[in-house]
Structures are given as structure tokens and as C-alpha cells.
Length: 270
Image (cartoon, rainbow, N blue to C red; front, top):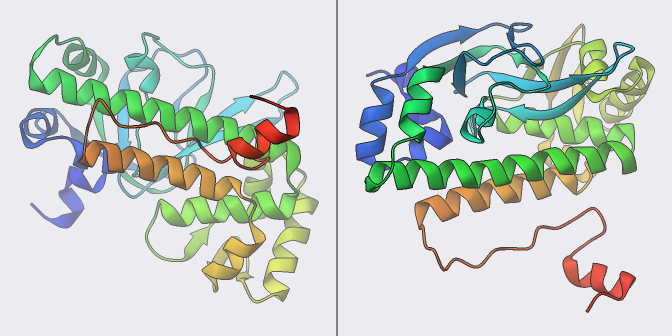
């Protein structure tokens, strides 16, 4: 099997113990994802679950007046279709490919058959992994909501670029400023100004729908704490799956207001 045909390049699939992986991988289908492909419309019955490897999918919410806002990015750290695991048949969001690449998909009926198995090592491992991924995805989405409310466009733009870099290889990102503005739910002028500042600082180079990240550390310095909160939560997921234990202590995630002890002090909790 070539590196390009290895489902274990998806981190969720890579977490599965060998007996689980051997069974699930035999059911997977490799598919190309092109930029702009809509994998699922709001309230549309899901036909597949997707495990991205090199592409990136955005979950988008559209308001009644047609404005859009990104809720989450899904790359090789996760999967699209977790609502099937939670008992739903659809989701109220659009799933849009924002970075081209490929993914492995599993037909809905096969996925549901697998997660409904009771008892045995295979069921326990898969259920535990999906539960932890769901927790990480919830953290991702709630942190994005906080970021959109409290942080500047420049911080949001920097955080978004870092998240894209983490989900693809290389430091080149092919996307227009208008597309980024639509994903973040802000005006294009705001993205143009933010990109201009980062380019003047030597952090990125932007030209005709192509962004080159020149200095990642500088980009991290311009980003808000939301990037690290999300990254830490997915790292915790991987660590727990690598060393599963029912007695593992839950970690308190950093929030946009600081650590939990700072919250207790601010609001006189405890």
C-alpha cells in the first residue's frame, strides 16, 4: 500500500486498535475532494461519513438572509458525520470542501452497523474513540463561537490560517480573501486589512488567491488563545486513545477568560 493509499493518515483511523482497524478499513472507499464540493446540505440525510486525509472540510451555518459563518474545520484529525453516532440522521449545517485533497468514506448503513455492535473489544474501542472525538469537536465549535464574539478579525484570520496549516502539508494555502471572509462571517475589507498587516510584518505573502506562510511563530503570536485551546483538546484526545484508562482525570480546558481558577476568582466560584 502506498502512502497515498493509507487510511491511517487520518488520525482517528490511526487510533483504532489493529482488529478494529482491519475490519473498518476493509469497508472504506477512497474519494477525491475538490475545493467547493458540497458533501452534505443542511437537513439532508447523510449518506456517508468522511475521514479526510489531505483535504479540509468546513461546517457552515447559513442565516435566513444568506450570510454564512464557519462552525468548525475538519481535516485529518477527525471525521464528518458524527451526528450519525449521536443518533441523528442529518445536521443543520452545510459541509463544504475548502481545501482539496482526498478522504476515505464509509457508507452510512455500514457505519451504523458497526457502531451498533454490542460487547466485544471492537465495539468498546470504536465507541470510546467517537465519544472522545465528539467532546473535542464540541470544544472546537464552542471556542470558535467565543472567538467570533470576542476577538479581532486579525486574530480570527491568524487562528484560521494556523488551523488550515495543521490539517494539510506545506505552508501554501490557495484561497481568495472573499472565501475567507465568507467562512469567518466578516466583510472582505476586514480580511484585506488583516492580510495586509501580516504581510507588512513579514508573516505571510499574499498574491492572487494564494497565501504563503513565511513565519509560523509570527502567525501564532498574532493569533488569539483559541487556536491553542482547540489544538490542546485534540492532543488530549490522541493521548487518551493512546493510553486509555477509565480512571483518567479530565483536564480543564483553557477558556477565553483564562484558567478555571481565574474564573472562580473573578466570579467568586467556590
